Length: 206
Picture (tube, rainbow, N blue to C red):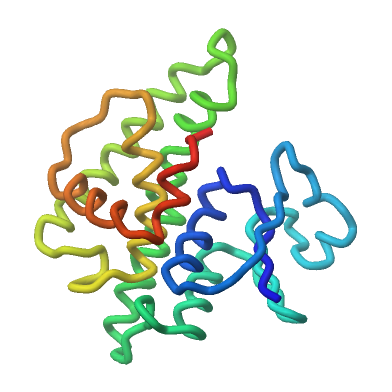
């Protein structure tokens, strides 16, 4: 039995949901994190000592860290997410997975948290402005990159599109004025139309 622990409105859980649906793999999702709690319990911490989501459980195999789970699913199950055999092509996927985790998503974190998790009266507007400015730099990088190719890591859809796509979904739908990025918007519209994206697109940003 395959079980995914995590709340559906977590951007990191959404990456794994998207990948599982792309692959057509059966799974059970168990609410955890945020208002659902669970993650600080002894049983959960035995699986994931960080107390974060997502955690993937397949029998006695347990894996945490969303991008590690994406890599595992692509390597173990192939299909439309099969990793390329060429080492350089795989490195391109890794490059953008790391960029999402270390650059794009961290840049928008303050804007997201202040907008969705902090009451307006207590909101740090300076932090929001600074976060938006940092993210605009990365959005422009992504837009320029996508102007020359259809997908994040080349000519075919990959787990890099899932990871970056989940972050882009948040960025493009936050209630703030952002710059026009035609290539980014074209790419996002294409991947958002994939059946595997349905859960991510349907879930309200919160």
